[in-house]
Image (cartoon, rainbow, N blue to C red):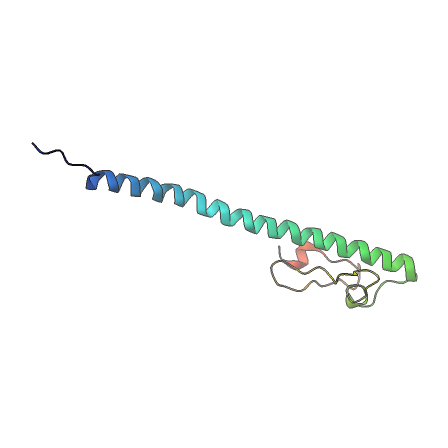
Length: 106
């Protein structure tokens, strides 16, 4: 009898099923990790902007009338203001003079 080399169709199907199961587990975790990293970067940016708002108050003895008073100044952001990794704009509450994560929806 002649000996055949290679894989059978059943063996190939089992390998494809295993790879599919691994991909189904790994891909959502990778995507979730990227979203989590963006959220953390956004929260860090908000903390930085709020710190600069405090510095603005300490320097001028008045709260900024608009967020652009702080973010548009090279005194507070020499390399430019931080940008949201999700592509949305930061807004400042005119009463509390704070940028908040809850207002930013992440």
